[in-house]
Length: 610
Image (cartoon, rainbow, N blue to C red):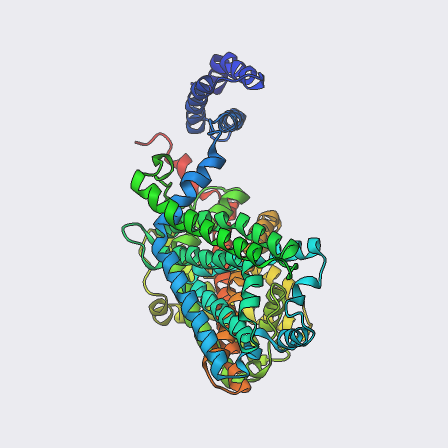
């Protein structure tokens, strides 16, 4: 059918659809029927008129109908109540073993803190800090040991405590992404602090007075940290024990459950901050009132987080939310012969990255271990410098540190070589995906083929030239990273076509600069997320762990901590550079089709053939 005839036949119907969309009252059933008819017309138009305006028009019309359908979806009015009555208790019950483990670890850590303080007079100063211990001793001498709760205005104190408590709970949960170990370590650290804190007051004959004051808000606050730790262990459990699901699906389900538990303790933390800011400061209030606040808080926690979930499990939970939506990365074949928009390039980049994330991580880990060893022998000063872990500013400091070529020339040669190796294995992945073949081991590929390709040395030289700009001219690191996608595009052109491909670089960069910028920003945001997740909260745990458990001198402690820090930094950096390489490869195929129209020519040539 000719396009004009197709439009003429359906024009009145489409006009009617637009009028229905413009009306204020919309029937969901009518909209559903409209959506089916429009998508049928759209499918026909995409088949016979793929590059015509009618296809664009129908696509826009279908999107409007879809948005309206989403806008009139039925939502339960009692969803807020259902969360507290059904969803949260269900998640707590399903995570009961993880919550119990968190509590046991916390209590054992508190016992360790108390015993350590009893046998080591200086232990409390190492854990609580010299400033806090000296201030508390001065307050004890003045006859007001709880004066710390009176130093600030109640409103300022409430805001500060609330933000801090939510932040601590959030990181306790988030660290569970490190296979639950991060959350357990954070619980250990907080448990040791509590045990040390309480025994410190016991040593000064103030255990009862301090407990009556602190546990008024501490009952809710400490319990929330323990619950957040259980939620973090639940989060990591999905990665460690995927059961019958894929690891990604299992992680997604455990994250859903953990987030529910985390959201459930936010109001409790706010109430704890209210008590601490507006009531705990009255340290001379009657004994029975303070004791009653503690008992009420404790009874509430036992009722809502222990008895109520158990009772609901016996009576049966509401089934409407138990069937979770299973998340999975789209398993579609990437089309390397079509012209793609910037959004499609970004989507295909992350799809391919997710598909081979495990391989890329393992290879990045190997490269990072080699880099850490090389720096130990040729840039030992990086291990000796005392690092300050001021999150989140460490993100920006850390990346500059990795590109300090003037201070550490070994980084220049090492980064340049590693970036090329990283790019080559990613190019190999893209080629395998294009050829629909199963990629072999990265290391096997490198040693059997990559090093012997004619393009390897030129690609390495290009990377070295970019590094020289940073080495000699003091090029800002951000600008260096901004140029990296262009460099990886040139490298992919050489990988595919040799030196003949370099001539097309300027054409591709000119035509695709906007798309390259969008992909770069997406990659840079991912890099920030990776780096922030892996940086100072975890590094602070490492410092505390080694300080509390190993009797080593400061120089050795600094070297160990800096070594772990460098390893994590390099892994994050190499994974981000792999993402640059993937996006450059997919961009190349799009621009190749625009410039050469190979797929279009094949379709024209085969037109009419069966």
